Image (cartoon, rainbow, N blue to C red; front, side):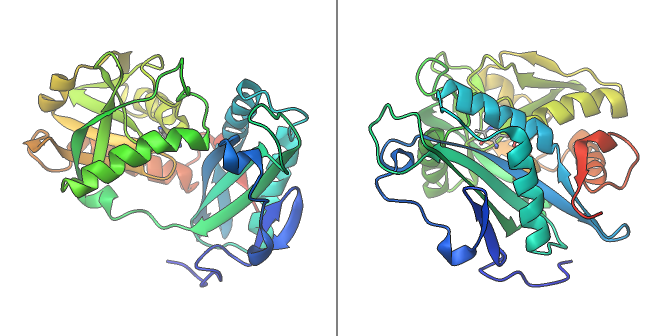
Length: 313
Ligand code: PMP
């Protein structure tokens, strides 16, 4: 339970803009920044979890997120971009300044600032924001998904591996269409018709006891949660995840299915295109993975302490 009500609708008193702590209301950029006009803007979504017993806040896999952001900036050819160490310090500083003692979702953005052309590669601006975010109710009850008629963007257009805000136009179209059609979320297929991922999460299925997920060449984001689950399944359950192409109709024959991502964590998918997945309830393997994942990220176990960055001394 939250121990405090964070101001600004859960965003806290402060944000970090271009390295400086600023009041939430003052975190603004110019409307002609290429970040706005040409979507020259990459980011990471992270979570920090509050451990009440230890009175500690843990950022989950902070360095892995910052490595991926660095890669996104490289592919976008951002010049003189912020170093991961600087961004790391900014994340911790913001959480401390807002005195966070509950679960939050964070954004770390890097973008082309000021006023420039489509090809501008500097100056680079950055911001860090946060918002209170408890575990979603969908984690318990699961969701109903539809295979989208929108195709997933591809590596040779706006690469899904680069976490740019532009990619979320594709996710937005698919998500809104799914909701208008009466579903909770969408599953996108690649241009070749194979399963890719959701608008903001990767997808796993269970078939005859084995875990399967589209491989990293199937137009997905190289998700940190996906990597955590692949490693966790092996360490916790002695299960090897198969990374391969997944056909649409395999979804209809799956025994269990779930989305995974930093924001969504592990969300069971209980039907696809109105075909029940397995029994139509949250599957046992999914429930076990959820339990292990939540214990890990909250620092309730001794495993992978290197993935948890404590915020308070
Ligand atoms: N795919 C997409 C399109 C996403 O937006 C996200 C959320 N970042 C994910 C997958 C999951 O990635 P991660 O586990 O690194 O948060």
